[in-house]
Amino acid sequence: MTSDPTIFATDHLRTHDFEWYAALQFAPAHQRPGLIALFAYLAEIARVRSLVSDPMPGEIRLQWWRDTLSGEAHGAVEANPLASALLQAIDHDKLPTAPLLAVLYARTFDLYDDAMPSIADFEGYGGEVWSSPMSLAASVLSDKSPAEFADIAGHGGVALTVARTLVHFSTWAGRGQCFLPTDLMQTHGLEREMFAQRRVTPALTETLRAFSAYGLNHIDKASDAARGGTRSANSVWLPLALARRTLQDVTSWALNPFVRPLTRPKWQRLFGLWRASKRHPVF
Image (cartoon, rainbow, N blue to C red):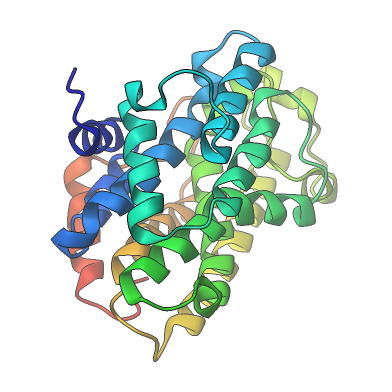
């Protein structure tokens, strides 16, 4: 395992979030290392639940990152090449740490099996895990304030969270979690206990399609907000093109999300990113 922070972060992102790794290859080379470090950090935090057997070790991992970002970590942070790469990016690109800390608090939800109470709560979750970091990345690429991208990233981050919730449906449902908003499930008569049966019911199908339509609505709003905007940040929005395809698949396929993950081969995703890179807005 290499100890070079940039190489480690690149390998980490390519392994654990290939879509973001591929999308950032469209960013200017001199800005790529910091962006890769940022999204490699997000990928690491997103997978904490899968690395632990119960919440407490997960809480400890998240607390270590809180201490690291707050400058209170004990021991040599430099011994962790991913943390080192992230701190270098924070210093070089003058990134505020508050949004990165917010990711940790939002991802604490992942460690437990609590229900997602409502659509409003889901939007808050999506805003913290994706929207705010995407705004930061766009500001790095454009040299503008993150606030300039609030609408695009706000809607886009929620849409990306919807798409990824659907892609990983079988994983979180299989371990007893529920990321679908409770109020949306109630509207369509879906009860959480139905997940244990691993059967596709009309209530499940209707809920997933409504959830997908909700995500597509956010992508459309993000696309509208991106019109006439700067193209310099386009590589940050490229994953939304893939998210749109995922959400469209849910609305048109007769699928079994328990056994058929909503993911496409790498070559199709790469081709989708390349095609999107030729458009504006890209999604």
